[in-house]
Length: 118
Image (cartoon, rainbow, N blue to C red):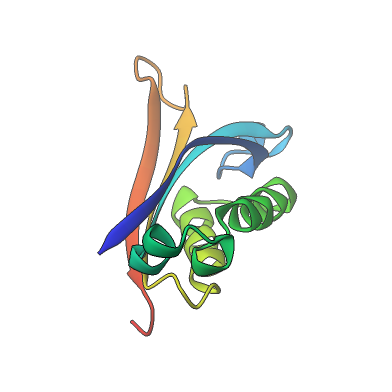
């Protein structure tokens, strides 16, 4: 299966279980792999034949920046659900990281894979 990659999408949201984490928005980094068939678009060179990843990015950013999840796992699930709303997306891989969430680590995060109908 082919993939469309969205790497390093930076958003700010309320995320975390500690009181201190819920006072102000924090940075999160999101990577998204959209699994789809790109043959038709590759052959036709027409926008209508591919996944509108700009639209998906806008929906994801809007949701994330308005969210107040406790867990990055829940945020990742919500991002995956938005991606799978597009009928051309058959599967999605979502990675969500909180930079500097752990002392001595660059980031902490989760990565999930979800498929249509599963």
